[in-house]
Structures are given as C-alpha cells and as structure tokens.
Amino acid sequence: MSNPGALDLAAGLGGKIEKNDVLSAVEKYEKYHVHYGGAEEERKANYTDMVNKYYDLATSFYEFGWGESFHFAHRFKGESLRESIKRHEHFLALQLGLKPGQKVLDVGCGIGGPLREISRFSLTSVTGLNNNEYQITRGKELNRIAGVDKTCDFVKADFMKMPFPANSFDAVYAIEATCHAPDAYGCYSEIYRVLKPGQCFAAYEWCMTDSFDPKNKEHQRIKAEVEIGDGLPDIRLTGQCLEALKKAGFEVIWSEDLAASSPLPWYLPLDKNHFSFSSFRLTAVGRFFTKNMVKALEYIGIAPKGSLRVQDFLEKAAEGLVEGGRREIFTPMFFFLARKPLVESQ
Image 1 (tube, rainbow, N blue to C red):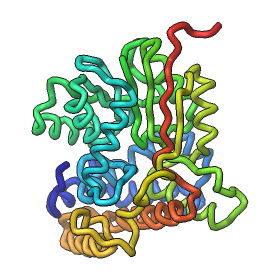
Image 2 (cartoon, rainbow, N blue to C red; image 1 turned 60 degrees about the horizontal axis):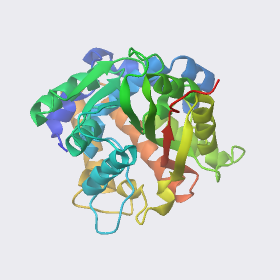
Image 3 (cartoon, one colour; image 1 turned 90 degrees about the vertical axis):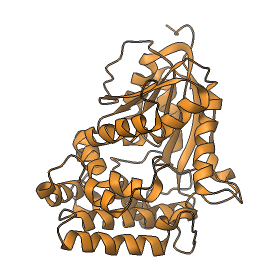
C-alpha cells in the first residue's frame, strides 16, 4: 500500500472539483447532514451528488493516512494494521472460493487497493465499479504501477444501475461500500442480477448493532458524526441488511459481526490513546501534524480553500467511529456470505 507525501496530498485535495470551487463543494456537502440541518430523505434523494462530493474531498486524506485500501480490519495481537488489512481482503476471497481465471466484481472499489490485492491473491480478473471519476483515474494509475492493468479495470457507474448484462460475474464483493446506497434492497437486487446463478456475494457492511438505541441522544449524535464524516445517507441495522438480501433473492449462508471477535479493537488506529509508529498518520499526534500541515498548505495557496474544513469533518468522523466502537453500537465489518440460487424461486 502506498503512502503519498504532503505535496501528493495537496495536489489531490478536491479530486476532480476545480480548486476554486472546493470550499463551495464543502459547504454544499455539509448541508446534507444533520449537524447543518440536513435530512435523511434529502441525503437519499441526492446520494450520487453527496457521495461524489465526499470522495472528491476525502480521497487524498484517506490515501495519505491509510494507503490504498480504505477499510478497517479484524486484527490479531502482534499484527500490524497493514497486515490485518491484507488478511481481511484474503479472508473475503477465501469465503467466496475464488478460482484462477474467474471474473469478479468489486462494488464500490475506491482507488482499487482491495481489488489489486484480491486479484493477485486469487489469480482472478477483477472489475472495480465506482461512480467517482477522480478515484477511477487514480486507481488506473495504481493498476499500471502495480502491473495488474491487464487483469484489473474500473467501470464508472452507479451501483444502483449497473451497466452489465445479467449473470455476468462469477463472484461479487463489497468492502465497506454498499453502506453508501440509499436503499440496500435496490443495491443488492442489482448485485443479484449481475451475479451468475449458484455463485456468491460477500460483503463487509457498516451497520448499527442491536445495542443502538434510536431514542438515545448520544447514540443519535454518534451516528450523525459517522454519517457526515463518511458520506453516508443513513446507517442501517444489521438485521435490515439481512432482510434486504433475502428480499433480493439471496440465500444467506452465514453472517457475523467480525468486530465482536476481533482480539484488538477495530477502531484502535483512530483511538487518541493509542500510538503506533507503523500507522503514525492515523494517531492523534499524526492527525495533529496533518491538520497543521493542511492549514499551512491552504494558507500559502498550495491546497485549495476548504481543505481544512474537510480535515475537520474527517476528524469528527474519527471521534464518532471510536465512540461507536467503544459503546458497541456501530460496526464497520458486519460480514455476510450470500448465494444466488441455481434455480430462482417462482
């Protein structure tokens, strides 16, 4: 996984948004969310615009802090964050039973860190579906650098309306991505349509757990912080995801919140009480340096105006994620493996 430097961060801030328009985009993005008077219905109705703005604004920060794979991971003691992320991706490939030469779809692929890792691990061809032009451009560049541009590619499209024929893929997976969908059933139905009969879909979903109390104001605040900091229209309960899968026609083989069995807390990299040299940029000290660096870069005109505002809402998200994890009301790794029946029920 690559870790770009300060100038790479500055150059990528805002993605495909014109540099002079970044501040305006930040303001428009913020207004979708509860803290700024936004409503869930508006976020769902405008999810394409909201999520695109989010990833144009946040991708460089993610790559600067996390590398090429923007997700959490089940983690063992003595295991580095980078090692756990790779193992988390390999686990997904093994659960899907991927075989060399198969055609696989990554739904909501980011800049393609997982698809490159899974393709090399399983010797499969992986197509990354993404609706963000900046992430696709960056992903293609990284595919070329990694030498996987012959087996891995990207398609720019909305995962609610996939541009693929029915029964196109041998396997489908999503890593912390379909949480951006305004409607889980609609998204899972599209995945069901493009998956070959008898084959499987696996995912890590961001969910509120059964411990979440929608009447608890603190729980509501934490949920809202995660939504604004991570470009989410809403965060579903684990049971709602399973219901949507079954409604779409899938047979759920097994499901589990892997966060519950993780020897190390999944949110440890963002915990201000934790320090690590290997993931220094994610620590409280590292984030403090990043914030001040962005402030300086924005002041001298290298980074566009509004960059610090993005850093601020990402910091809010980190706080919400840690609190949600500690209280066990939120998980980023509700795992499920589901199969499309060989013969569809009438």
